[in-house]
Image (cartoon, rainbow, N blue to C red; front, side, top):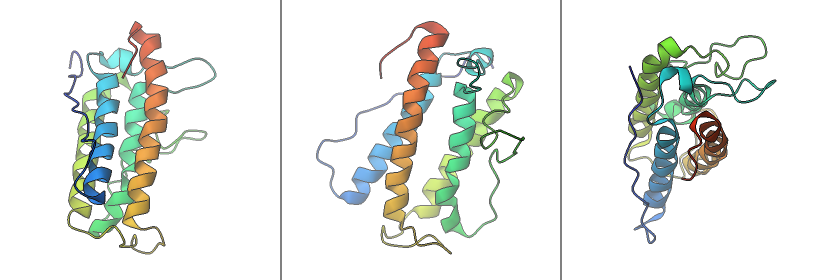
Length: 168
């Protein structure tokens, strides 16, 4: 893999049809923003760390968000794939354990995790609680939008450090 592709990212509509559509559109926008921040970079660039002592990298963020998608996976009743929950002492959900040689596999795992999330909650009520928990699907959507937005802010700074690119 030479570089990751840069996805198209359309703006969500200003006047969504309903609450579910608004949540799905905003989450899709945030997911695409993460991939946009990684677009055009080589695996080595994706694995570059921020500033010591931090071990944060764009590839680490992709790995972390692959794992965080498990909030949605709980709705499909299938065993979790454990996307990058390979803890190393002091690590954050495998986000510290990046390897540029595995960048293509990490992207494929991220895409599979997102696809599984979409399928797991398709057609479910926003009021449906996560199995075994009190969190509703609505709360999970809001939490995931927040999670992606926070990490996309980190991605802005990481990308700027790598090649000077700034902006959305």
